[in-house]
Amino acid sequence: MRIVLLGAPGSGKGTQAALLVEELGLPHISTGDLLRSAVADGTPLGLQAKAVMDRGELVSDDIMLGLIEERLEQDDASGGFILDGYPRNLAQAEALSDLLQRLEKPVDLAVQVVVDSEMVVARIALRATEEGRSDDTEAVVRNRLRVYAEQTAPVAGYYQQLGLLSSVLGDGTIEEVFQRVMGVIRSHSPD
Ligand code: AMP
Image 1 (cartoon, rainbow, N blue to C red):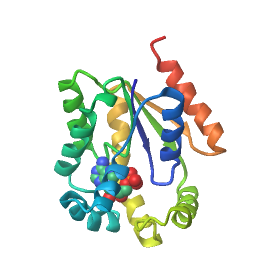
Image 2 (cartoon, rainbow, N blue to C red; image 1 turned 45 degrees about the vertical axis):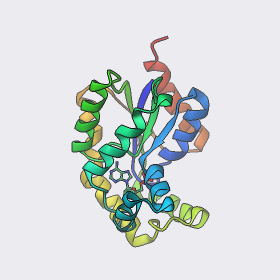
Image 3 (cartoon, helix red, strand yellow; image 1 turned 120 degrees about the vertical axis):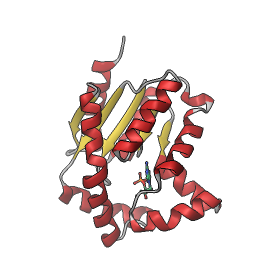
Image 4 (cartoon, rainbow, N blue to C red; image 1 turned 30 degrees about the vertical axis):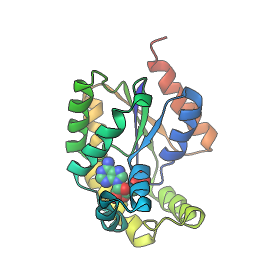
């Protein structure tokens, strides 16, 4: 199954993606992780992306398309994937549809984890202490939430128009949210 996970920074989407990977045996493709490893490796792409990420802005659509195209063409993605952090705006959503159409592997389902913004700020503050991410300071978090509202939130509407969107509430325990996500996935599974 080819699943796109949507949700604001701090919605718990990354945690849910990791649980889904275990449950469904599909690769977790996180563009944030791909970028962070490029930064850690000091590749030219990583050097270019770091300043943008540290401001909480979006890395350019061209760079992201190259990155995601290379990743989706790897063998382990041929049987499906959990996509986390892409698409982040409407142009990326359209580029992804074109790419997956070319690969004859369209998105089956987009799952949106819906949370309120106070919960998001609290969760991100916690993650900042746990993981020490350089883009988790308060000012940058605020900017990331603004970028999300302006550019990423419309992506849910894009998938809704295609009849592919399901939303679940992101409050409660990790396990409760996971059961909601799995409920949606089961109801869309062919078997
Ligand atoms: P994430 O781990 O998904 O929160 O991503 C961390 C940062 O990486 C974001 O704030 C962006 O700067 C960058 N990033 C991740 N995915 C994308 C994307 N699809 N398009 C543009 N920038 C991205």
